[in-house]
Amino acid sequence: MPRPWNRILVDDDPDYAELLDGRLTQGLRVAMCDEDVERIRVGYKCINCFEDIDTAFPESCFLCGFPMKAEQAEKFGAIYAGHIPGLRTGPDWEAEADRLEERKERRAFEKRATESGIVVPKLVR
Image (cartoon, rainbow, N blue to C red; front, side, top):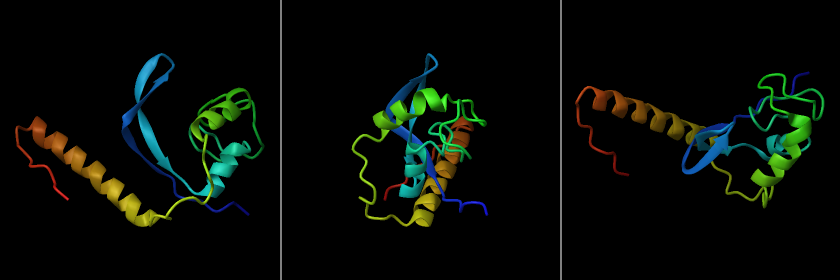
């Protein structure tokens, strides 16, 4: 039986940048359940693309090619230092996903409007 799928929320992190393969890229905010964090820690989920893996710590991820055996444990230690499972207020995942989708759509709308010469006032909440 396949394992249940858990939703992973990903959004841009404007306060963080990362150097990947000599390229400077914008960081990401990632929210996932404790079960998925544990699967990453024990090597059954790729830390780079979040794909589920059948065997722990293969040489590389079959989807993205990340060198899981050589680098995943070290990267996990750096990213999840201080992670305490269950230490959250438990956000409403669906509401959070909707908020992120709305924000993404608004950014796309503002970009299209700006390119067309239309001024869109900022949304105040």
